[in-house]
Figure 1 (tube, rainbow over the protein chains, first blue to last red):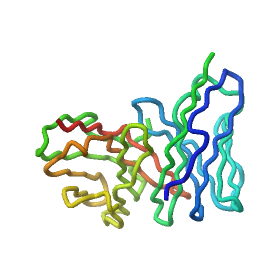
Figure 2: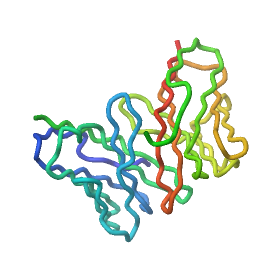
Figure 3: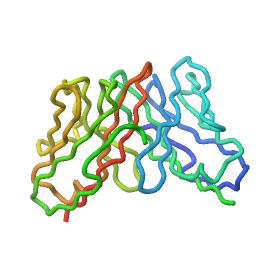
Length: 109
Length: 113
């Protein structure tokens, strides 16, 4: 089963914060986060490893809660460039990614 | 630019025709993945190569689909007897590094009329 992302969509004003969650009913070994803008390919943001530390990409950070089998992506002081659809991907031992349905983020001026 | 290229970027074909897509991954990477993405969905795994060996194929990949990676460099994905349901964005990802980070190419958008 694919990871479940929430919320499905979020609208922010520039400078506001948001959290995107990615939950899995199957064990998470690593979680990959991507951002995709309309008509473009997904862009790699960061990877969270089981037992690993919190990662950052600019003002975007993420954490991995092994107990809850959940990863969270934190958009801090959002910028217009953060608009897009965010996907989390659960990796298996081959590195094959199973993606969630995505969270659409719209940042307005 | 992720260093992964795909060709063509767009392909329009008639139902029943064969199409072939190419992916050139990052040269140092030995893993290559193909995914398919339809509107409003996340990418879905199709198949995976480590060097020239095809190690896994999704159940989504019917016998009309075939992929190769000769000499462990570029890869091709062929779809025979295309159907309208094959219309999608076909994405190639190059995997490498300590944690197998995957970097996507720009994709090939296929439209089957």
